[in-house]
Length: 61
Image 1 (cartoon, one colour):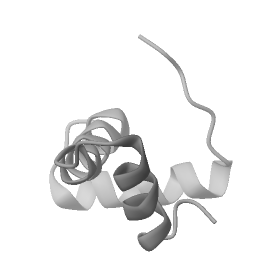
Image 2 (cartoon, one colour):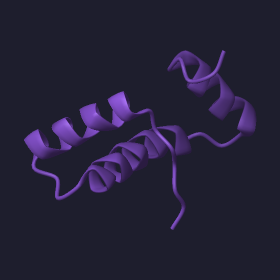
Image 3 (cartoon, one colour):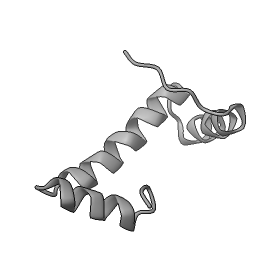
Image 4 (spheres, helix red, strand yellow):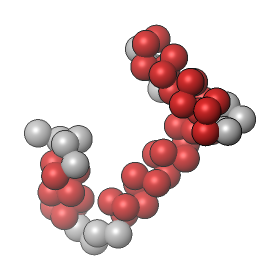
């Protein structure tokens, strides 16, 4: 399992949302959100299409 560092303020927000939404942990919530986002991007075939979608979502500039 890999680890990702988050700012304390962001992680506190994640924990709050995870609890309210009924997730067993902040990690479970983060994994679910990442899977959801990746599945929406994964539908494209090429690297260029992925880059365009990520730019459109504001993840890349």
